[in-house]
Image (cartoon, rainbow, N blue to C red; front, side, top):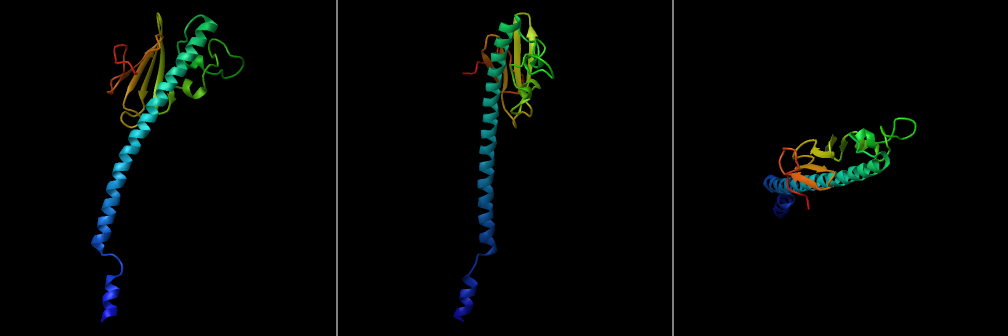
Length: 156
């Protein structure tokens, strides 16, 4: 009789296993949200770094050619041959293609300089802020899907 009681006491009941699985699922859900937030923050930090890289390349381009570049391709490596105004070889090719670190970058000319924008490829997935900067080197951000502009708050 006592042997049968011991056999019943070994192992877990179905209810105990379901409770443990439910607890594990809750913990995984919380961890996933935290992980996604960390990934978005790292994408945003990388985007800020890439904007700084574009500023540095624009400064070098201006010192070499007397004008600002009007496209990211002008700052990148040449397809073949020597570098020049159409491909100054001042930035890596991946950034000159306009996509890096979950963001889409654009460079546009304006009469007094240039404008750089960075927009997440998928808002609230690859990033939750849009960025704007110009030849003043001040980076501005918008916390909504609307692209940041010259009047957006400064990133500090």
